[in-house]
Image 1 (cartoon, one colour):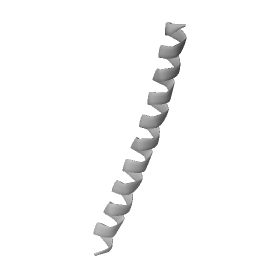
Image 2 (cartoon, rainbow, N blue to C red; image 1 turned 120 degrees about the vertical axis):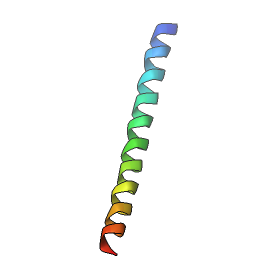
Image 3 (cartoon, one colour; image 1 turned 90 degrees about the vertical axis):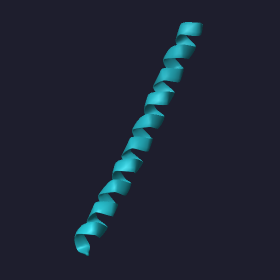
Image 4 (cartoon, rainbow, N blue to C red; image 1 turned 60 degrees about the horizontal axis):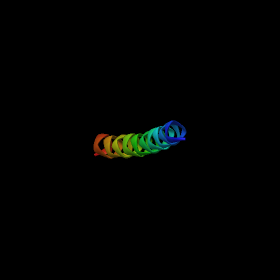
Length: 38
C-alpha cells in the first residue's frame, strides 16, 4: 500500500514539475522575444 502511494505521489510531483518547467520556459521565451524586439 505504501509503495503504491509513493509511486503515485512521485508521478504527481513529476507531472507538476513538468508543467511548471514548461510554463517557466514559455515565460522566458516570450521575455526573450520582447527583449529582441526592442
